Length: 244
Image (tube, rainbow, N blue to C red):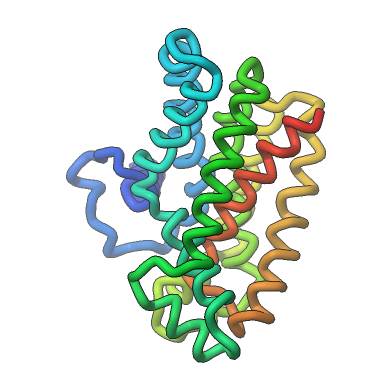
């Protein structure tokens, strides 16, 4: 029962989906982050089924892709997209760690945040329209995105003491990373097949390199940084399959 509770807590935290009330409390985060890729699989499953049986049979490829991307943002409450925008607002608008982190705390959308947000949404839409016949990628990308977050949590310092990023970093144990990695492995095997196996190296490598760059820009990672990792990794997975 505790594992079911951890899963529902992860699902409730990362998505707009309702979870049973007895699992709604977030007073114990200690085993939640390992379930992030599994929560991503739920999001991906909904996207896949909606695309396969609703959007693509009814609309043109471009309109169907735009509908899927809109649903994608809705299901996740725009949580990671917000982190992406805040991160690039800070990096683009600040000149040192302190000024960048201060800009990231501002809830208003700036120029660099708007550009990053529009770029990711447009690229996702175009890429989905290009390979509408391989919709399994929709199921896989959210899993990989949330796996990449754990790489940042586990191996890189926090930039802001007392923030949500530091909380999850402290709780991302080796066991949690192992659980997330197992979920990612099975997702790749079942949904990506042999063609998807390179993702098991590409995703953690990309997450590591992005995290190193973000640490140079910000002095560490924040909750917003984890959102940026997720969004960029999801986009990279779509690019990977479009290039096959």
